[in-house]
Amino acid sequence: MSKRINFEDAVKLYDADFFELGAMADAKRQELHGKKTYFNINRHINPTNVCADVCKFCAYSATRKNPNQYTMSHEEIMRIVDEIVGHNAKEVHIVSAHNPNVTLDWYLEIFKKIKEKYPDLHVKALTAAEVDFLSRHHGLSYDEVLDLMVENGVDSMPGGGAEIFDEKVRDYICKGKVTSDQWFEIHRKWHERGKKSNVTMLFGHVESRENRIDHMMRIRELQNITGGFNAFIPLVYQTENNYLKIEKAITANEILKTYAISRLVLDNVPNIKAYWVTSTVNLALVAQEFGANDLDGTIEKESINSAAGAKSANGVDVEEFTALIKNSGFIPVERDSIYNEIKVW
Ligand code: V47
Image (cartoon, rainbow, N blue to C red):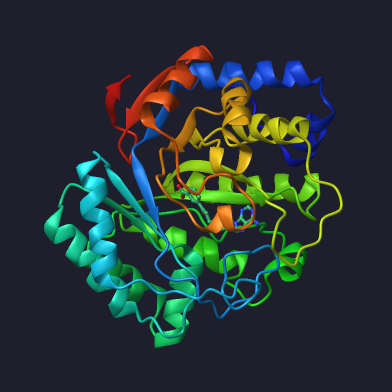
């Protein structure tokens, strides 16, 4: 078995030769997945943008710079779900802002309605930040909220709300939101219920390379215990319409190095997702050679990252998406939400 990379060596990897680092990550990727690149046919639904929290990086929250508040009705959500099932979607990804006027029951009812109508549609919903918010709002324990999610049809949890786990940076960019320890406690409890989840990292803002490696190390530690994370998703920070003023945007070189290092450090997490929404499709295609083996999905519509400048509001066409993956030398494999293969395109 190859030796595990420790914190110091992982930080040093940033100074390694760019192409050698890519080749090392690619070797690990090929050992795990060969030339397969996974994606799914999915849709993001963001039911409300009214938020009690004040994350500096967020352009989506209506209480900050965005004057257009909205909260969807269950009917609106069901209309979208009906439509996407007609387009062959296998997953609906439902995450929102922390709206004090929307109750846990409101969410549970919509999950139940979706599952009753479409038992095979995978419901990926509620980040650990939302679970924490809803538990505080209703005076419920995490266990109670998670049990209700399972009872009402949530299949897996998305990886949002992780941001950067280093407490000092976290305090600066999203003070008052779920803490790092609470984020891990919620995912541990979710995994203990036999359920899977993802984990993200928001990078390219004020964090250091050391903060990124620390973030990965904390993930590796919980994964050692539960094995419940399906995918690690580095989210490239989008600079527009928010309160986190960053002078110099992160370079493509640094983004690719971060993908590659995550593939090497997170030796117990099966999938590294290059989320094209925040990296751009072009860079996500290159990331396939720097350790990434998953490009998320067709998405159809997304509001959180596009509010901050990502060019993703209307998703991508599946034919075009798979052609791009093929043209870059990889095999597009449509998967379900827990990485069972559905179709090789
Ligand atoms: O947690 C907010 C991020 C996340 C910005 O689990 C921003 O499969 C970049 O978690 N620039 C929500 N990112 C999205 C998310 C996600 C996406 C795709 C797949 C999965 C999954 C999860 O978006 C938030 C936050 O970290 N975000 N603002 C911004 N300015």
